[in-house]
Structures are given as C-alpha cells and as structure tokens.
Length: 122
Image (cartoon, rainbow, N blue to C red):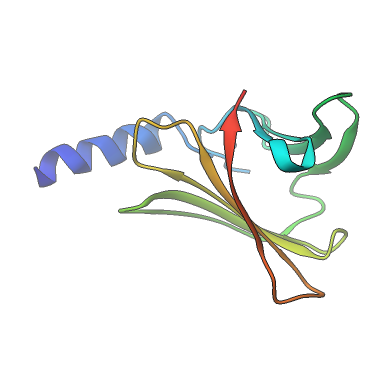
C-alpha cells in the first residue's frame, strides 16, 4: 500500500502540480461566491479574473510575489505565496484524490479572518 501511495504522489508530482513551478496545475477554477476565476498556466502565472466578464483583475507571477513555496505531502500538493500589492497571503491545495477541486485560503494582512473555499474546476 505504501508503494502504491508513493507511486501516486510521484505521478502527481511528475505530471506537475504547479510551473513558478506550478508543476502541473493548469486550467481554470471558479470561486462562485466572488464571481472569480483562478487560471493556472504553464508559463508560471496565476491569473485572477472576473468570471462573468473575463476581465483580468491581477496576474500573479515571479515579479510580484514573495515566499513562493510548493509542498508535497500526504494531503496533496500545496502552493503558498505572499503578494505585497494585494496585501494577502495565498494557499492553494490540490488533494490526493480524484476530485478536481482546489482548496484555497486567502489571508489578508488587515484581519485575522481568512477566506477559505473549495474552488471548482471549470
């Protein structure tokens, strides 16, 4: 069983889960509460846009984020980073499951209340 789990984790990491290195999460996920699309692209950008209009709100990339980190563990792969422009820390976790959902946590500097949601693949 441990070998099977190790193979699954290796396969997930090999297909890449996140290219800043976003590894392999590529596609668009929607946060329905805020009419927001989060697009992870092969060129290492994470783009936040308005879902209903397609208008780009922000392009997160290596020039405007800090403390970019990718962690792989038993719960899946997690990308974390901080953006000084938006004054928020972000966390995206793709669990080791068949679900395409990504768990997102946004931690604004000005409050202790985080925004946490499972965003759905479009």
